[in-house]
Image (cartoon, rainbow, N blue to C red; front, side, top):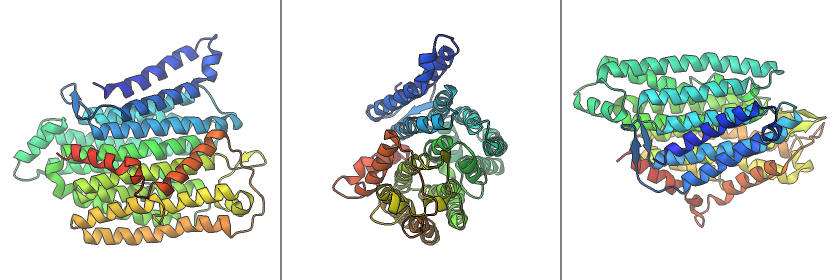
Length: 478
């Protein structure tokens, strides 16, 4: 089964590097561990993207290899490779690069790969926890930073709470249906004339647990703190790979396991979307730290994806997947820039540090502004069209009120992104930045911004992203 290759490969490479790194004669391997892990992730991403079409199952349906899984695998591995490449220079300048860092990143990626491929609730839980344990360690990776320790502690506490709710929900669902396999759960729920109390509570707990892991409001409290306190490369990895992949896990659970209960979970998802967009729009106001600002921005982007999921249709799922890819790419570019922000040899991340950027670094300011426009959902950036697809799918599904509220929240939230552009182009700088841009950071920032621009034009058709999302959604809802 081709779907096993990414998870097994990442785990084998990570564990092998760790074992070799313990040898006294392996200094060269230790020094190259980041490049090795990045190359493995990038190669696997290309392999998965070029894999054969169709659906395959292994271990009695516990693992699924379908277009949705392959799309998620390619996204996770691609983001993993990019984060590893752009983070090495930053961690070296901070004198905190150890060979365990890329290994933990690979282990976290392996956990999410298992989770998005799972057709069994218990396997989903194991995959998510494998990822969570590695992320907890990564958040506290910089042992000299009190903020990193605080972020890790909050993540552990709230992550454990979400995991407990999810596991308890699994137990209740097993009690109501007699199975933890998604196909069996669907058959059992379809055979019932009504929704049992135990099954309904179990589904609600699963939704809350997954919403918390995916940083959807009102279960979002950990996200801004992790975005601000965790090392920047870790925050980038969580925002662009882990959280987005968790949203895809939720898509699979709802549509392959609980589709007969759509009347129950659809209003929950629409409510999560509206609250997330509102919290994001309000939370971005008055922020002074760019990292915390991006944490609140991520909540809003996930709220937009939740709106597409809540539409409950194939078009809604396809638009949600498209938006996850678009905002993930935009955030990669932003975090690549954030890693270069320094002054007097120290990393800085205040929004005011961007003042006058357009005068000192006009090229970087233009690229950064384009990424902000995409996250804001304003033309001509690709984010405008991905959000438009989500709103249109929601209206087509008959949820006009939810779409209207979401559109209002999106418009209000766009002012936060425009404020960043105003700081760069209008405010006078007091202390200029000293951007420490390596080749990978420049390539990622430039590439992400260019894709946000030309990816919106019909000539290139978004490079086939929406078509891939439609294929994944069609395979899921067949």
